[in-house]
Image 1 (tube, helix red, strand yellow):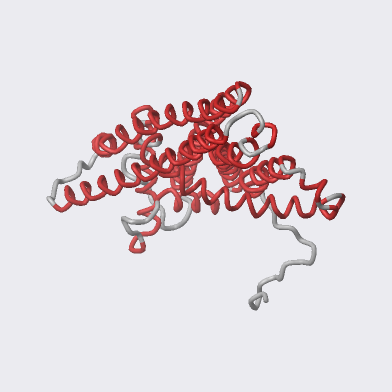
Image 2 (tube, one colour; image 1 turned 90 degrees about the vertical axis):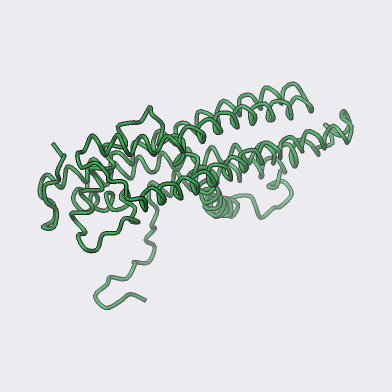
Length: 323
């Protein structure tokens, strides 16, 4: 029921944005299509044909897509936060983050907390201040979430393909022994576990890094006041987390590719080629997710800074160190 003064949604009105389409429905549709065709469900169940089948397909894609998106966030976001984003190759990120945090602090005043997420507040400022900025941020967010979900689909899909669709088909059962098929499936599952172990490692390293930062703050070490000194200090502090996490990420990716190719080769040489292609696509997709997400973050910060210069909001003033 709508609140007083709030317009109720109209019958037949569909709330489907660009993020829902690219980040949820398309990845969910990929998995649903593979499962449906792999098990030939439409030939076994009459009610999965025609318009009714399409309705089930779309509904299933939406549900599965949300599950994939949630799992992808849990699995990959920490890898991005601890390694890719903080690497020396993206040193400009530290400068714009500090300036954007100053903007948010000036806008919120007494409501500001050091625990606030500056990127979220910068995005809110950009959305309130400029419709074109909001549209561009949404487009980059849709891109990043789509490639994150696609990466997750490939990571999850390979052991699923080996264990359910390929390893237990009668055509493979007649050629390969039971132990070979079990070994192939186990290696496929191990490839997924390797990514899970990477997620556990980077999460633990991040917790340790936060403890070290808190300990240094308690020691009363003064922070530099100039923008460049603060940027150098922030960048130097981040390297203790970024370097080991990014090395672990690259090593895990290499191990994952080897496991995928070997597990496919145990069943058939053609599957080894499929696994190699899957590995290349996964690496590209994962890199594209991180690249799009970092661009979206930096753009949100930049819009917030630009709007503060234009005098957006009565509480936003000129920020020291902002040209």
